[in-house]
Image 1: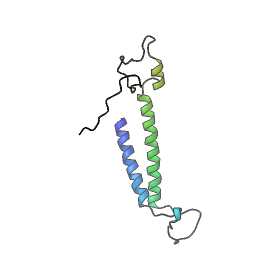
Image 2: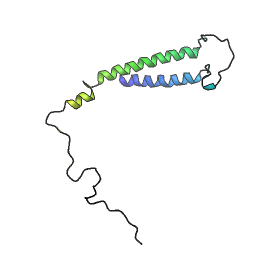
Image 3: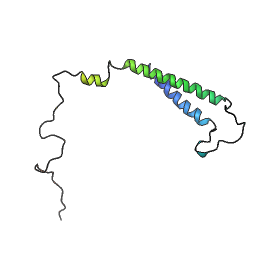
Image 4: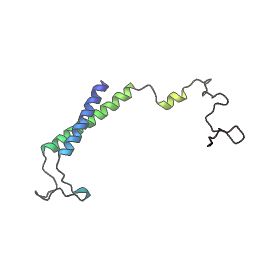
Length: 119
């Protein structure tokens, strides 16, 4: 079920991107004019692309909510933090054997050999 909703969600996202890119720019944002033709009004005419954008956006939001609900139902009981605190009392973190730590050697230890140029 989750995979079906996810595929529909991705198709809606691609369709929404395509529909938005097909629309004519009317804003004039970033200094780019969208054309001065047409009547200037507070509400533009509702075009088919505009209506389709709203439908796709609504469907996209619905699939987003559905995916969130499905993920919450499929998740384990509790969060990751709860799982970390539920470790048995006797368990400890693994300790690296002596001499195999990841820190560089100190000045008094044997330093790694530095290659030198010989002629």
